[in-house]
Each structure stands twice: as structure tokens, then as C-alpha cells.
Amino acid sequence: MSDKYREAGVNLEAGYESVRLIKSHVARTKIKGAMDSIGAFGGMFDLSTLGMKEPVLVSGTDGVGTKLMIAFEMDKHDTVGIDAVAMCVNDVLVQGAAPIFFLDYLAVGKNEPTKIEQLVKGVADGCVQSECALIGGETAEMPDMYDVKHYDIAGFCVGAVEKSKLLDGQKIEAGNVLIGLPSSGVHSNGFSLIRKILLKDAKLDLHKEYDEIGGEKLGNVLLTPTKIYVKAIKHLLDKVDIKGMSHITGGGFYENVPRMLKEGQGVVIDTNAYPRKPIFDMIAKYGEVPMEEMCNVFNMGIGFMMAVDKADVEKVQSLLAEINEPSYVIGEVTNSGKVEVKW
Image (tube, rainbow, N blue to C red; front, side, top):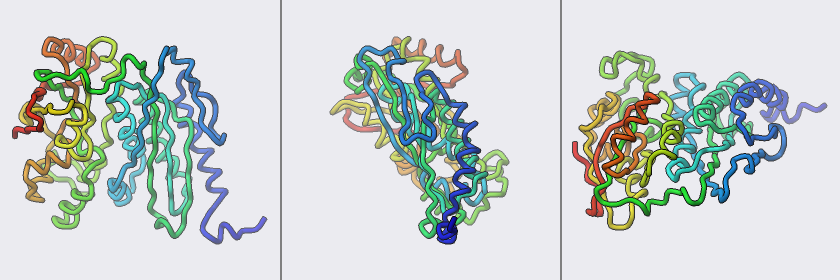
């Protein structure tokens, strides 16, 4: 067989080896309804196994962004797949949908099977945390498009919810209490600003340990995977009347919280009501970033929030404590038409 394709920079054999290496990771994610479709042209899922009368499918897609530049520098590739899953499943969760399956897309400059395995391991870890199946994906080797050490990873997930239980924000009322679930760190947003402040301007070393972040390596702190909230919210959905939810991603409180509100509604959020990871203070200090802008770029320690009746607050926090999920009362819904953040 001719080697012309290999000479152009594409190694088909490496691709076959990658598929072989990732099969065990894919197998870990299998759930009821997931059909054996790895290697087929399309991933398959049997919706009838969910037992829903009027299932509504909710889909989300996202990538990891320039956080990948940190992974390249640290040569650590086993966690960014979790980020890719988290950014998608947390989004569909907001509307009350339980994620059921995920597909990933990897674009690489050079197909290195062991690196592909690490990336897919992260995706599988994220799917296990999300209780959804990895039913397919694509790996594209694109020399000249990407440097040999670089890659991009993205994906999309589909969730399902009974039509009668779909959350669309219409139940939220002024006086509802905001309960926040803590983030694991900066998650997967704002890394263009982070890299400019900490690496380009301050010239900090990703491999160095800094007292400001508890003596940990900066690179490891920045690569902390995005927290997945699926199990926590699924533990609540059939037990509490949640009025609305918001996934705090890029745009911070100012952009994401209004997405769960009705026209004319607003919120008051108190950032002193919960503990904040020191990485946020480090970014603000080195970049001289005003707190208002910090709250407009980063999650500031709250990765997910929900609105509930005052009468349900104790029940929600008690249920979350059952599964060791910390939660904080961080504010309330108003009729102000704006997001007011106290710091």
C-alpha cells in the first residue's frame, strides 16, 4: 500500500491504535438505553428505555477554549475532557434535563495514540460523573492546521426531560431565594484574560508553587476540571420545586443569571456569603481587575445556582448535605430588572 497519506502527515495506523486504546474508557460510560454503536457512522440511544410519556430533548455544545494552552504547557491531558463534558451537561441540566449521551470531537496536529487515550479518558470520566453515555466521536488528524503538539477538543450532549417538568423560568417570582453550589475553580472560562495577566504580564511559572494558592502549582490549579453538577441536581429534581437554574460560565453573574429570569426581574447576590477560591483573588491582584469585571468574566466561586421558595431552602440544603454537596444562600430574586452584586 502507498505511503503518500503518511508522507502528507496523516497516520491511519495511529488512528486505528487510538480507537483500540479508547474502547475500555468508552465501555465505562454505558448506561441503560445506550446501544453498541462505537465504530458505526452514527451513535444510537434508545429513548423508549427512559419511560417518559412526553420526552423533550435538550442539547448543548461547547469546547474547552484557551484553557488547552495550559494543558499544552503542563503536558497534562487527562482532565480537559472532563471540562468538555461539563460545559455541555451543566447547560442542559439548567432546563431540568438529565444528560443521556455525549459525543466528542478531537482535532489534532499529530495523532499520538497515548495522548488521544488520555483525552478520551477525561471525556469518559466526565460522562461517568454525569451518568450519561459516550456513544460516539471523531478524531481528525490535521497537519498544518495544528502544530504537532496542539489539539482542540469539543463535544455536545443531549439530555431528556418530561415536557411537564421542563424548566423555562416562568415559575420564578420576586422573593425566591438563590442557592449557590461552589465551583471547583475558574472552570473553563476567561483563560485568555488569565493567560495575559498571570503568564504574559506577571510572567508567573505554571510549574511553580505559590503561597497565594495554598502552595500548589499554578498550572495544576488552573487545570482543575470544571465541576459537574448533574448528580446533585438529579438528587433534588423530584423532591423539590426548583423555580429556575443557571450555569455560571463566561459572562459570570451579569450575563448568566438573567437567562433564568422573566422580563423585568433581577437579583441581588452577596459574594461574601460563601468561601471563594484564592485563585480569583490572585487574578484580581496581579491584573488589577475591578471586582465588577471579575464578576462579569468569572464564576467567582459559584458554578451553578438555583432559585427556590423561601420555604424550601432548608429542605434543599438538607438534601444536598446528604450527598456531601456544599450549598450557600447567596441572594434573592427581585423586580429590579438588574443584577446587583455585593462584594
